[in-house]
Length: 155
Image 1 (cartoon, rainbow, N blue to C red):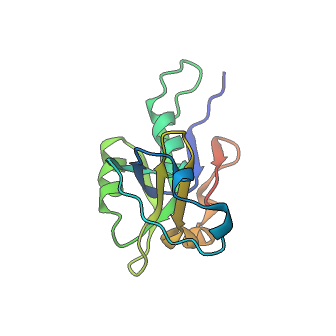
Image 2 (image 1 turned 135 degrees about the vertical axis):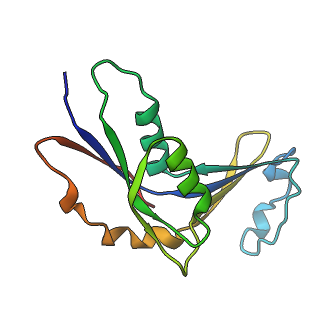
C-alpha cells in the first residue's frame, strides 16, 4: 500500500469551449483553395467547462475512493489568469488545495476551443495565457519522502 501523505499535481488549468457543427468540414474546404482558407461555422451546441490536465487529474484523484490510495491533501500547482475565480471556487468546493496556483492579474486563464463535425473531425484553437507562468512554480514544498508528484502536460 502506498502511504503518500500528499499528492501534488502540475499541469494546465484551462477553460474548455466545446462546440458541435451539424455538418462535415470537408463540404467547406476545397483542396485547390487550402492556401487561402477563410471559413466560419455556425454551431448547434456549445458547452463551457472547467478543464486542463492539472485540474482534471487533481479532481479525479480527489474523487478516487481507492483503499490503497487516499492522500490527505491534493495540491494543484499551476496558474490561472485574471478570470480564474470560477476555478478558485471549484478547487475550494472539491477540497483541492490551490495555494500553489499562481494568479496572473494581466493575462487570461488558458483556454481551448474545439469544433467537432458529424464525422468527429476537429478544429482546435488554444490560448496558453497564464499557463506561461508555470516555470515559476516553487517545488521546494514537496517532501520527496512522503509526497507524490504528478507531472502532466501544461501545453
